[in-house]
Length: 207
Image (cartoon, rainbow, N blue to C red; front, side, top):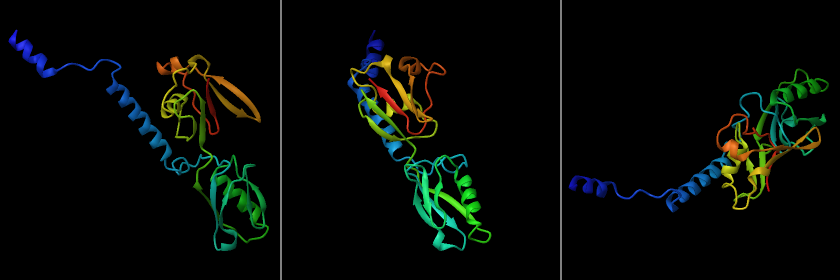
C-alpha cells in the first residue's frame, strides 16, 4: 500500500480533458499557423515552372542588352501588363516561361534576336479568404496544397455559433460564381475526398 501511495504522489494528478492548459495550447498552435502563413516565402510557388501568373503579381521583365525595355511591372486587375513598344500584353494565366516566349515573339518586330526572361518578384495573387463565423476572418496567403480545414485552423477555428453543416467554398469559374458545400465534420475525421483543395481567390463562407 505504501508503494502504491508513493507512486500516485510521484505521478501527480492528470489534467482533465478540455482543461484550460489544453485550450491555451490550441490557441498557441493556431497563432503559430497564422504567423507561418503570413510569413510564407512569396517565391515558394514560382520556382517549379508551373506557377500561373495572376492579377496583382509583380514581374521583373529583363531583355538582354535592352535596358530601356527591362523593368518591373505589376499585373493589372484585367490580367495584362504594359511594356514599351508592345503596349498591353496578357500575363495572367501564363507561366513566366510562357510569358517570356510571348514577349520574345512580339519583340522580334523591333529587336534583333531578343532574349527575354521573366521573374515573379512578388506573389500577390495567391490569396484565399475566409468570412463569417470564424475567430479571425479575412484574407490570408495561400500555401501549397492548402485545404479548407487548414484555412479554418489558421483562422483560429470556428466561432461559437458557426453552422458546421452549411459551410461552403465560393469560387468564380468562367465568370460565374459557384458554391461547393463543405462537410466540416467529415473532413475533421479525415474522410478521403471531403477536404476540398483550394484555388487562389476562393472564399470560404462560414454561416
